Length: 445
Ligand code: GDP
Ligand code: IMO
Ligand code: MG
Image (cartoon, rainbow, N blue to C red; front, side, top):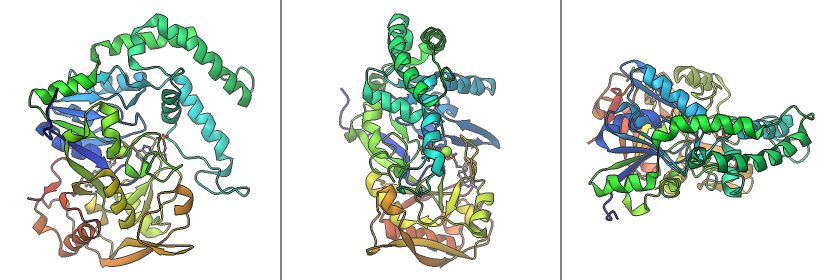
């Protein structure tokens, strides 16, 4: 049993995803013995750029590019085996060593019917458009999911009897028996919504496919809770890699426009089996502005040419789905709340370079709600839709900062912007990212 030493750190997104977590994890990974994903699945898209080479990671932890570091897919992740193996093949073909990749036997499997269920549910909800209010009730709308089967896979995990775990892929008889029952239930549901026979899952076919995928995965499958405990007992250190982000957390985000896991730092324990007292440093990653993909409220969203310019400069198009990301000013009310929920001990501000060229920078410091002004976040997707941001305006900067490596060398306006964020949130900014490459990073003392 490991001691109470705080030998684990974490990188977690504090907005609606795509804050640059992958870049930071890749940068920090060589300082650790293991990098572990604890939540989400292939809905995540983490980009890492090393010497101009871009890697897009969805299920494989971003520590994979650091030789000798365990890259662990924890039990809290929902694993699409086909996608995981495709990712492994792509990495191998680019010369990346994947021999330290380990997958929890207790991680749940995203099955083919989960992706269909995800698509069907979105289809049924989307008659009113993504995240928009309907004429009837104003509350039924598509979530705008990535359609990677994430929600249905987590739903089956909670249902228990209809769930398949990674370990089950190595037990063909049990798998076949389970799939017989599961397919009959799923097929009945699909038949109720789609013309008879258009969506029909065959247990034999799925068993055969999954057993084959399982045999390829077999060398990677382990009890990762014990592996992580062994790393800590041997004096090693662990880095948690958050996927999705705090504002998409199923309990603390802008529900129902969230993902289906605890994607804040709170998911780390259940998603890995590492106890809370092991975790010391929690780096909250924050884009210098806001983005969101899919539906749901975003009080500071921009619909003008400023938003368009930021979208283009920041290349704000999804790593996973290619969808244009919604863009807005930095929301300090939401950020302060997210830092509280995820227990951020420091902040990493990313994509600061993208703001260069804006004459003015706006920061939301409160919301006007139907019942008056508030300075606390409204963690409810329906109520937040009524929030009108109250802005503070600061001077922008126009210099190209992508080559800056020392905090003091940033333009005065950029430093003032960062200091205002620190002051409002009450957490220090320890890292500033000024470009996608590993090298384009300012580490403050
Ligand atoms: P993640 O999901 O949090 O890992 O973030 P993504 O990789 O989905 O999205 C972040 C995007 O911004 C990627 O294309 C990164 O290569 C890029 N990026 C990361 N940090 C910076 C930065 O400081 N400046 C710029 N211009 N791009 C960055
Ligand atoms: P990374 O790790 C941005 C969003 C989807 C959708 C909602 C639910 O790259 O930051 P889901 O498929 O999870 O059921 O979709 O959550 N979403 C993300 N947005 N980055 C992500 O991951 C996301 N993961 C989920 O767009 O609005
Ligand atoms: Mg992403």
